[in-house]
Image (tube, rainbow, N blue to C red; front, side, top):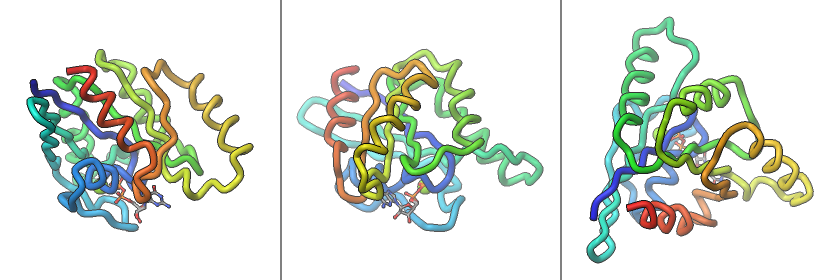
Length: 167
Ligand code: GDP
Ligand code: MG
């Protein structure tokens, strides 16, 4: 059994950190600087007979004036065509116009979209997190909404499990 999972989101939300955590090793470069990932990076998680290929996409950008941004947008959207699941990563502490743009691109995707609300380790007040998750829930038709911390590994197993269930 083999399935593809695309990890998408605007730059700096923690996609590469999540991929590394999913695979338990550092295969994708993470950085404070946006646009560190310029090409698609594939990671394969093998558990017995199940193999999940995770695709770390470059961030999607609204600004298409620069050629590099145009190229990165194309690389990111072209990986959405033939996947079993999309993990839409957002930063739980801020929602931006770029997130809105990624969300709009995902409206055309047929496979389940899991919303991974990352960096929840930065949200100390859980009474802030819950209403924010509810606000995010009404923005799209998500198969699941998971508060995660890619650095700490919180709920990263749930993403792996969801991917396996869909194969
Ligand atoms: P990408 O551009 O979406 O691939 O984002 P990166 O994985 O490169 O991460 C961008 C920045 O966010 C880095 O400084 C990461 O260390 C940080 N980061 C990623 N995940 C988390 C998280 O769960 N919690 C916190 N506090 N920071 C995170
Ligand atoms: Mg990256």
